[in-house]
Length: 98
Image (tube, rainbow, N blue to C red; front, top):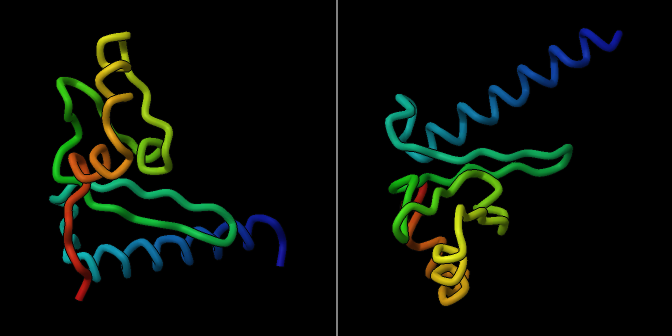
């Protein structure tokens, strides 16, 4: 198998995993916002209830991994007062897969 075939196979595999996750999370139509991250040997999908919280802080995939970026000192100070759990709970949708 050459590199092109390997990449195509890997892409098909990732698509299959992604589709499986969306089905389990009842988000086949992709109407619920989500974050998706993957590496060679792991991946995760999280559903979001909103993109912004705490007066303008946006949560992207890096935020779900623990790296929240803010635009100014006021938001920085606000976020420093929050626990990791409070931050994630403000963004992430609580939904158990079937």
